[in-house]
Image (cartoon, rainbow, N blue to C red):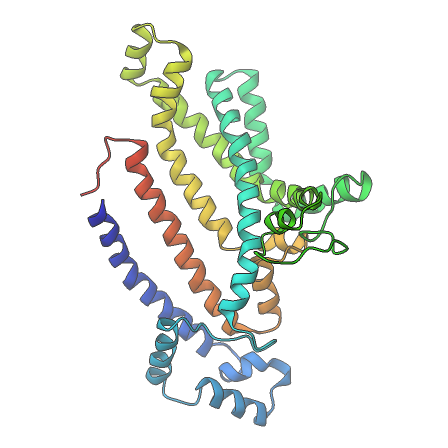
Length: 334
């Protein structure tokens, strides 16, 4: 197992190297005459262009710029924003907890509802129950996230006044951002603030989790039906084992393997920033930060965030691969 992990980490090095080259060239090949002009946009003047070029080293040869860029990355320096001057790493540590909290809420909703629906459909294939579950999954994967988000906000926020439609906490509450996880900060503040934090999380979690919900439902259904037809399952039933024992020990344990892969991929994708959901619900995460940075031509931030997202995605996939061996003892990495 240790050898497998080391090998995967070594494979990640050329991938990250290639991505760093692409991101480096992305900023230098932006239209507008040069990276400084592209960043400044309509505010570009000869004086500002010269100042930024000298500060960021855009006036040096490309190879020297790239070596400087790699050197900064290796020292943990991902650059700073041209808008507020803050380090990208510092702002990321403030915003990422919000995205992580939203991702966890969406995955709890998707897994908690999608897997039971998939198992229900698999137990009644080609029945009206299977048809209803199929319609639900198709609805979840077909409707755009921003459409579902605005619909949920209008119905449950504007019309019914049941749930808040923006932000992570009521701004009138006196909650200090200690961890930047709204629920944890609310718990630290005491009282009933945690109820407000959870209520703010419900609608964006449903909107963000709608597509993973549909995917998990379909994958669970297909995987359970496929495993149920295996010889060892028929043998277990012939030996007189109860349905619950067969389902838990023989069917679901093997059906989890393809499902784990999909869960890992969806989690990695959501951790890279739920751009639409965070924008619709004014969520203070990295997704909305990406949108704001693109609008403000803050391409240094965009460049650094893409690299961070790649590292997150590769890390999640490594965790999924390692988890395979624990879910199925027949799998061994050598």
